[in-house]
Length: 196
Image 1 (tube, rainbow, N blue to C red):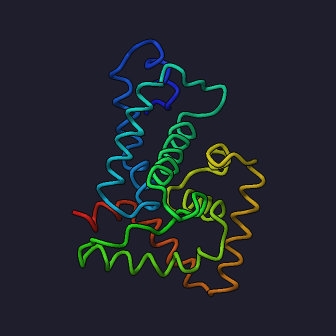
Image 2: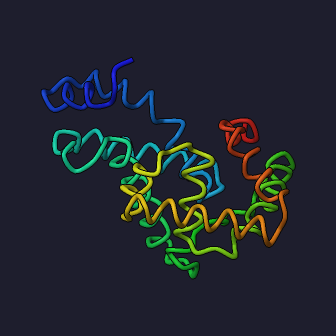
Image 3: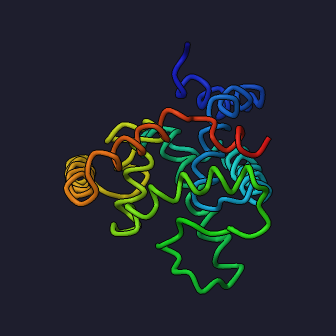
């Protein structure tokens, strides 16, 4: 399988079909990334669509010298979530978006959210940036380098924040916190399962 740069180069040359490959590679990951910040299927779907529309419109300006496509698309997604909350004029701090949208859920969704709540209770003690590093690393299996590019930090800073956060979670909450985080990481398609 070719890496992303092969397709981004084709896109830069005007090959719109190449963007379809990038879309297929990242649609589930970006949806999941947004869903875990929004927890409302319809909004997550709309924002995911907006992210790929914006990426398609701006793909020719993508500069691989500034970082990989994956970091670029995640930054677009991150900004889309922040913009969503800004336009709603929510009282929730923009940098502390993690669990919202609890109303109007089905019983099946509520069961899944209850399980996730066990993790979010642990994660609430961390900063928004620490939580983002954990979710990108465990749930989305991003490399430290990619996470650093997404959150605007250094690779060593991300490694240190991740290690410290996991150690603190284990010390504070015992091994169950880490096990639940790992289980959620394996449940890659959780939003689709609970919302189907």
